[in-house]
Image (cartoon, rainbow, N blue to C red; front, side, top):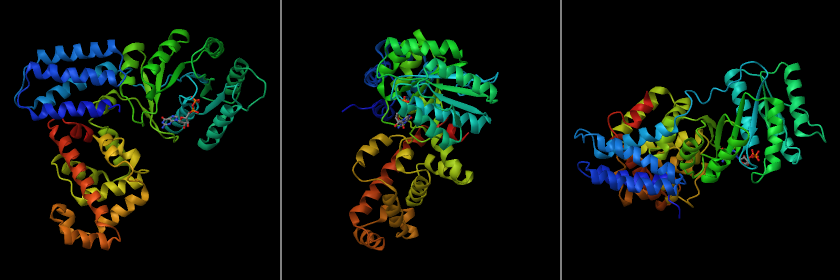
Length: 445
Ligand code: GDP
């Protein structure tokens, strides 16, 4: 099975951090693996080649410092280079929507998440910038798509242009423009039709709409899971229509971070947002730092901390992060994590953001992770004494039996929980070891 970039790179760096000093051979060996990983992650060959070359030059030029570990050194160089390649606009989330009504053209292939993303952006503009937004579907071939946008509009409280049967896309675009002006809207978004693949008819249609609307922003929505295909799609749309930015969807999945890297390197167009799920809130501004961290297998710690802060007292979060940095992670910490997971809409969303989580998810596969399970795990922890929670390693057979019984569960369930606590503890320790200027400290700033 395909091993993703995160897993692969964290394997490489695990080995490096265990070695002593960093020799040139070390760098070469590590970078060979990084290269393979990049290619497997669907980064295109020229992009991978350039990337490795740049890293190698930087790494060889740098003196090996004894005070930091070789792993830290290479991680830092690879991270910086990833960031360098990924960096787009100063502020990718700031759309050009002055001069109302500002048109935003949404383009892409069918199924890429265009309609969903249109609504997500509309919601964001409305809630974060107080904009009045009008959305219009131009997908005359699929009445269901028009209805879908209408339903989403109702759901998020954003107006949609009334559907008129038999109208062509250009006529709809004109009507949207008029309606937006008359209705005093700040922004109108045109959700164009998609096809399963790029064809002449689709392009001609989008072109005609573009010429009528004269959009301030033309955002291409592509499925981040499709790797190189996404990059080709972007090249095609950019050549023919001229795009101002890209939205990568399905970055919540078992994603190949490589798409983001290639996309940026090949098209030169900034990635503006990433889609992280089906829900209307699952859209984030693209942040090179975060994606670089994610590609490196360091997990999206910044996002994790941000989310934690929304629901946790800030102090509590800080205390928690300090403990993790010291490599401390007992049952009280685990309990807190489990409770947070329940609050944050389940395990999956949370795990996706944690370092090494893909590995863990694989191990826990089939364990039926859901709220019920979270509740049972919390019950097990509740059934422990204070001493046991602080030092779970003291649990031998008789204690285990007592705890399981107290929670009305089997000892095997408790063993699973203990394994999870150990694995999470190890992950936290690794994160802590990143040391000075490590991800955790940065995340707390
Ligand atoms: P369109 O044909 O391009 O308009 O695609 P849709 O907006 O209809 O989306 C197709 C499917 O992908 C829907 O089921 C969406 O809920 C889902 N989807 C869209 N964006 C994301 C995302 O970022 N993550 C995930 N997991 N699903 C998404």
